[in-house]
Length: 84
Image (tube, rainbow, N blue to C red; front, side, top):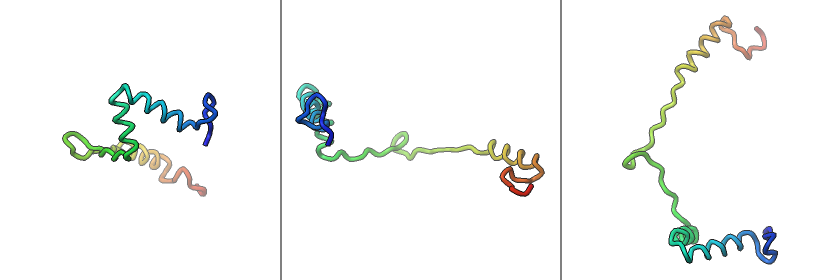
């Protein structure tokens, strides 16, 4: 482990942990987060409004039409065709 430049007897992780504990004495938020990390915080589910699944729509229609038009303009030959 890499040593902290200002505290050669401690690693970066030790210095960060000490600061976190120090701050948690004054802040309930820091204490809550510290305890959550120590206990192995459960992942939070991702969802839409009211817990519904998130809907993702991808519209490729314009890109497909454009690709077909370019293909037709080249007489049906592929741009990557080694034997035009």
